[in-house]
Length: 290
Image (cartoon, rainbow, N blue to C red):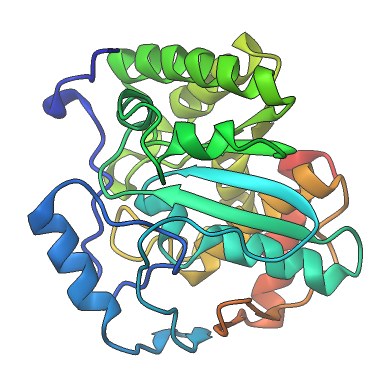
């Protein structure tokens, strides 16, 4: 079993949002107290308002295990609350639907406060990351943990990516590294975090999903953009921008011109003010080269 870095050296990925929503394809986390807090929040049908942005609709309660949503190019997302808060995979899928190109089928295995090495250490348990990879058929497997700017976190990110890449190699899937953002009080860590994910992708001939770079590109255009919700998790605008960057790389298509309002397969509707959406799309295009 690979060694998990000490908690003091790991970025905390626990959700602390009031009324935070989770997609139905996320299984419950391993820590009962955290799980109960998340489940209590998801039982309430919430309308998230972050003016001038809004997400309307409710994501259904968690089920017993991950489920594939939709048909098309299959993409498996493995991560923590930075992935499931605002349902980033669902937004990516909705953007692909709106573009009229290749549709995406997405599945998420994400738990609160998980690093990738935690996913790996669970082995081939049904409903967990390795078991879902072993089912095969995936085009991309997206890997995400905390911002990973600290040395020990970089080491475990690279180790876990190499381990997961061995499983992916057996089914012909491409590793895709979701480059996560640092916390709001550690914005100076963006370059090291980006470097960590770039190194991990290079180790396994994978691709980088340059989410953190897209955030920086957005702030260069408008330093007042509110991309955080609580200092750790993304706001609606931050999740929309993250999804734009992932969409561009996976679909190999420019994010410029995508709609500012999309309906997710969960039934939720995401809306970003069109002027803000245009800035975010240009930032994602710069970061991804599309």
